[in-house]
Length: 101
Image (cartoon, rainbow, N blue to C red; front, side, top):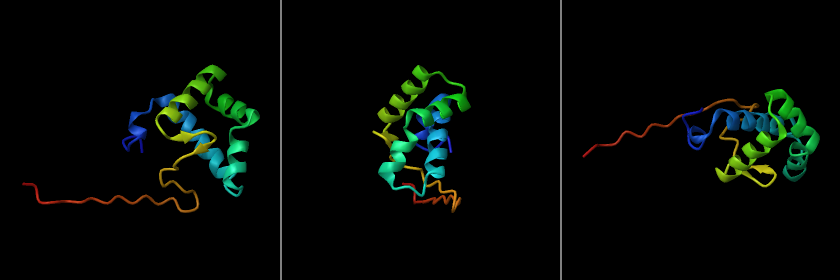
């Protein structure tokens, strides 16, 4: 997945943070999006994420800022899950082959 934009422009630590956000987005997937965002971005949840990936708070917050600048996060919500859905973990690639002139 790292070769797919905008993921291809992220550093490894940003991908680690995004992975944790997507994980908790799935764990709390039954909640209404606004409430889910509050739970995911709650201080205690972020502490759990930081401990899991071994990152201090300043670095974690810098990576969140970077994800926002890359338009992956908007406020307290994930803009896209990049088609990843644990209930249906299929990925489809569509190749368009045209006549090169």
